[in-house]
Image (tube, rainbow, N blue to C red):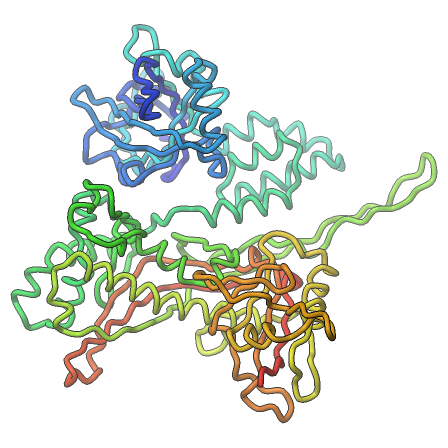
Length: 611
């Protein structure tokens, strides 16, 4: 009997009635799923359209409307989703007002773009029947999750699309799941492998091997067909992983249940284990935590916060999403976005890989092929690219905050938001500091400054005040290594920024290295290049006789700084902290790791004097 691999990515073609295109609201109603059986290579698939079988959380929380399943070509948003009594899934999508979105929407109205596809993941399927004559298995997909809708040039079934009704006789919703077996047969790998030393064969074999290793078979097939390189695929895999939604600890909460979950009730329950009222009040939060624990295979030290909750988005101005109850914009972002936005390294362009399980290895090229000049009819010497891996292992970071007992007794949605924002802040500071200056010892990750092989700009034997020449040399280190592209910029602390605001580029030039104060997000510029200012960058380093007074200045491509995020948030109450002041110490635990993909992408000055 064939086995269906959970997590397989599927694309189902569906249709749109053009009469349901609303020009004024810029919306279109789509049918994205039905229980129509479809025969695939592993058997017949039937999608279960009961409420318990479809995880609608991603679509309901503002799922994306994309072009050709490309997350970087985002043209709209999913406004609403419902499963009808006819067991058909439907969604209303709204186009944006950017030039790109306007172009696509006009094509839809004009009937030029008619094909639509929905992407979804299969989490579980049950064998319900086996045809003894043909040996065909029929599966009912009892747990599946749509996550995006795309306008496509060629859908899985070109007979349906915008302007055609899925209810019309003869039309059929087609399912296309990209499996490794199908990809291999489509590309005819055996024929390619028989070419032996052929360069194209080597490229294809390498790309397919990478795609299989990192479970990106569909992406690998696209790169083969487009004639792109294995190294380009590695870069694309990193980008895809950094945009991957947190789903390891999703437990399928409805929108109503997500809004019901309270950080305050969970913390109050932990702070008052003997109070029956507090325990009863947090019954729902405890059930959610236990569900996450079952999925992760381990028990919480306190309360697990489901990722469904961390991704919630209650915004002022949207009545159905909290607008009636909130008078400020404290809830303008979900917990995960709050965490990202408070980390300066994320603002500088670091990539976060979310929803990880187990140890991971990130591909890295360590050497390139060599070019040769040859005589006519001569052959170049064979050369190969060299690769290794950057490994990441989960390390637990604990950040704490003290909250008053009276605050924990509040039920105000503003107080709930305040607690979430405060927890995000302290956790972000801890991760930020580790990414910049983690020692790699005592369970810490290795930060940029402690990474072996980064560039080194020295001021002097006992340190030196930073000058324009040092700023240029930092850039030059990275540029000389051909790494000055991507999310480049400087990163230092407020002491250095203040010093450079009064440091001329050249004597008498009246042009300061740092010409302006940082903006609200902590960004300014050094000589026109982007610069982030954060006191997470150390100012207590030692060089020679300058003990504990030296600061660090970094320059680099921060896209090569990777933050791995495992599991979910674990909230506990510190039982050893004295409570005579009426405060409760809440500890937020998160499993993370830090890795620099290419050391040559960074250079640092560690002996800058500011006084």
